[in-house]
Image (cartoon, rainbow, N blue to C red; front, side, top):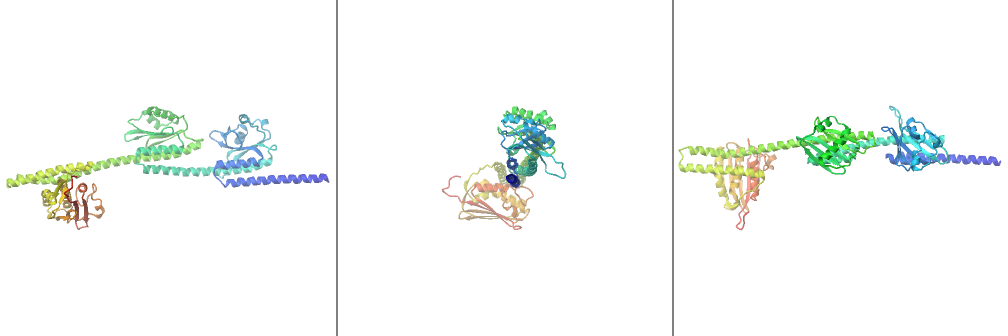
Length: 585
């Protein structure tokens, strides 16, 4: 009876122990499942899973090895309680290497009695390995692809002896969970890289759009490329504007930009047939040529061609990249090629910009020459007309003398005009203010005024009602009147009427010039005093009114326009009064 009771108690105890073990397993599996949905960061996730595996297997430590196909190795990603941060093992070598190669589960009660066990890690760390359970981690099932091994889970030293078949089954279930975690994390990582690539390309597009200095643009591209790729050195070498540009950024120094008059044949040959083995010597060549110092030690290298259009005779290079696998190098090469395309686009935009500047300079020179020719035509015509009159002997000597005086005034006006245009182009200010009156200024302008009206068959109407004194440069103000009158008469063509009204105001003298022409279009009225703005004339570029505005501003005056379509235009100038206690300006 006592024996029966004892056996019953043992059975109950054994059942309770088994139940607790199953509860522990279910709890661990629940925690692992919860962890799978809590984060996509692989390191955090796998560390949590390995903790659960160690506790669930009642083991001393666990290690996850991931497969590195390029090197034919497995390497430790997560090693709980391990003293070595990274362990690498060749495929087929050691217990874990054998499992990674064969895909077979290995369960060993005593490691030192198995020829496949490699004790070198124990010797380095002082750890004593006894029982081992090593399980392959297979890629999740796929309909189109054959499953491959992603890695290996290795559990060491079960506390109460050897690992059992139940342990194998349980670890196999957990290994499938680990595989799902790795696959999901890789997909997440790929998606994250795509977003990073989009951000990087957007950032480079912003740099190209906002940087106006080509050297600053090039510097930003080099620095940002080095930061994104974690490269120690990024350099670019390319033909540009009949020169060759070499620019580089290196982590231990700074960016530099040089132009070279010629390119060596060695470089041309290298660009046409690039060899990654020569890039290190190429960098060392540039180091000695430019006196640059860096600690480059022949690390990983990527490069891409750059240039204008189909001519990719330039090279974009990144040296000493932080890449642990060929896949990472391929990913970096792809984004580097895209950045190189942005670099080529920046070169094209800069070339277009420089060509546009050249065209604008030539256009400005052409416009200036057109303006000068246009402005001097009128006084030359006047001189030509009075020269013919002087040759006519029917006129008296006194009349001929008047004609000669007019010619002299027109020549002086012509010389002032040329000087004025040159001063305007150089931004110079050269007015000589004196006490004067509206009648005195108009008297200087009167011969030219009447000649202009006569040539264009324009009716002239003068109404001068001013007695105030003003402080002006008579020659410059006469030039203002000439430009306004000439523009008005040319806008009207032959015929029409031109009015000049001068009236006193308490705080100044108002000069009004009105015509009966077509008026000034509203869209250019606000810009009429800018350089090269014109309307209503067959020739000329509008520089004359820009000079008018400049002279009036120098006198401390104000000019405005009043114009409506088909109702002519009125230029209204207000000049301040002369004050008796006013000194020289």
